[in-house]
View 1 (cartoon, rainbow, N blue to C red):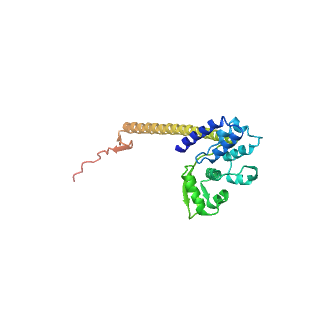
View 2: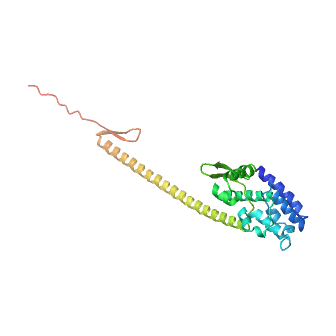
View 3: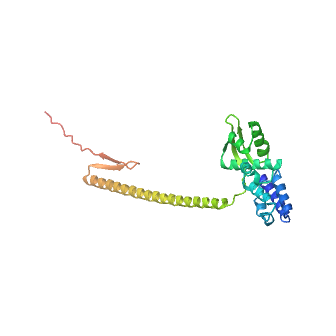
Length: 256
């Protein structure tokens, strides 16, 4: 949260300055913004009319450089180095920091070999110094360095400016996800209704069985009482108990 608050304050400061800057002053402001050690968001500057007016002028390279810092990486700069103004050391570091942010957004485990290639770093010691001192201490990423596996395990990465069209893609993805969740919810609700109906059927069937059992018990008891040959009772569990009454069939013995 502290990083986001600081970013918002810095962005507002540069936006205020850019509103009155034109031509060379606007180009110099871009150089200053892309060199600032704590500024990592540039889309607000890139949307200002006085900055966009640099397109087609002798300072058009500064506008393209600002676009690169908003959305690009160190590799993209190297591929278009002849079309862009030369970078100062602070700008080189800033662009490498932004490149780490981009890579950390796309994968949770970054191999050292990939990082060294993308950042134009020659050895592991230099890479780890960059990750610790210039990225983690700056608050733009958090993670764990695994020297045995030669990788950086990303735990957090600050977001960069959205590329043109990226917002529409995000909205489309979220809309698709929302539609899928609504369909899933309907399916779950149908399953719940089916389970409720089956439960009602089970209760109805159980009631029918109990009623028939009760009728059977009453029928047996009535029949036995009618015959007068037994006493009928029930245990606490509802089981039928019949005690038969034996007739006294003993006769007096004959005397000889």
